[in-house]
Length: 577
Ligand code: DGT
Ligand code: CA
Ligand code: ZN
Image (cartoon, rainbow, N blue to C red; front, side, top):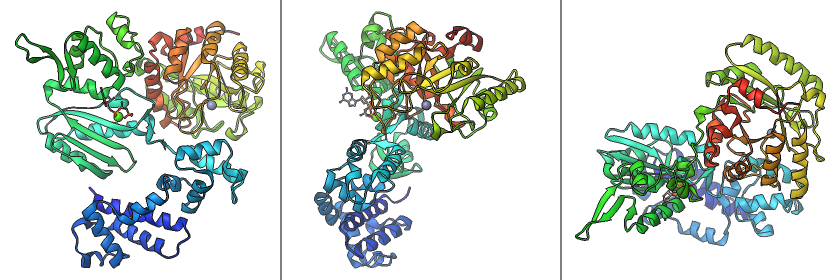
């Protein structure tokens, strides 16, 4: 593990430099930055070094050496604390946005009161930034584009941006000698669209060894705590990781507790109390005749639910929104699983804005075990995505026909499109060409600012088109970037059922659109869903897991999702012109 003190001191030095720079102070910022850089490269812990030795570090003079010692003693630096008070905005995050330096961050704070990334996002959406001196419409747009790529907001992370890392840590820590069980709990286990941290839970014969392994993991930049049964660290990517070891006999109770949600936990605990019992992270307890608490369940989650008179509730459903009642009455849905998915119904290739060829995508999908895919490249009115015109579409479909012959027995490629729903609800491609496609998705990619009534009407008009099989990413939201446009999901769902048009559950990590609650809502009105990853390269195909996760959070069963069917069954079920 790198020396955490060094890293943290370097970080504070850099921040001090930024505050000073924002005030146009000369020389001092460079001195702090130079020292910070040396500290990053210095391979010995500076916390217990003497003044003389510290001064040997390149760029560290007496004044900065004293500050390093101050940090070693007090875990902070007074000058930093003073500056932080004087400039109460999130300099670190704001100055990290491409196109914003310390001076701009200060200006944004002073003129517009922008303190956080959220404030900035809001100001940009309201076009408040372009009025500042030195800014214009163009720089505002640029700034917005930079922000769009930031993966993190409000201290939360996209599930899709941390999931692999969580799996890697799980593998790594599960291999530590003594570990008998180890699993990631919390919001990641519940497949929530965004997560704040990673909560690992373990049973180990040697918990201390597990904790030591945790703080020694690659990528750890800070250790908050390292005890005998709990450790807590921060990773380079900015996310915190907690690891807890629990006794074997409490595994189920602890897993249940740390999976959450908190609301679900509270409802379970109340149910226990109603029965005169007690439930906590150690187990479920009943009072004996002589007044002592005796554990009656807790080794597995299954027995916990069973004792409470409930069917087992899958983690994705544990949000206290009615699942307890369903579990009590034996009416829980049998949730769809990612292995039920037989094909991926949205992806792009180098015919529009994708990175891979049709054949590369098809072969990658075949390796995932899919029976079919739909290639759904953009169409002409989406200029920035190199949308295809009618002529190009005909050529692409011919190419797919040829490929299907070549790949026969490997995978079936459906000729699909992602056409644009224009402002008035018509499409940018003629019906004659749509009729040649196997699978047509329609989406809104422009003119987002509309009343809910107009937008709902616009999309419904597209659904009435007999060639349109599905509405892609029905609300248009981009997590951390763009709010959903105003649209009435219930109305769309009713229209979906009536016109036999599907609604997409877009699996791409920053879309997840429809989201969990909208899926539940649409399901109530008997909408049928299609799952698609919206892949732009072969790696993206893995995102299906997150789409399936949202479908599960939306209480979907296998029959609610069209691409659980075989290819011929799917084609038979599509709306016929
Ligand atoms: P996150 O981290 O914000 O994405 O969401 P969670 O659900 O992972 O929340 P977290 O990490 O704060 O806590 C993990 C689990 O621990 C949470 O799902 C339920 C449980 N938990 C935490 N605090 C409380 C509490 O005050 N009461 C109860 N009953 N459970 C709690
Ligand atoms: Ca968590
Ligand atoms: Zn799209």
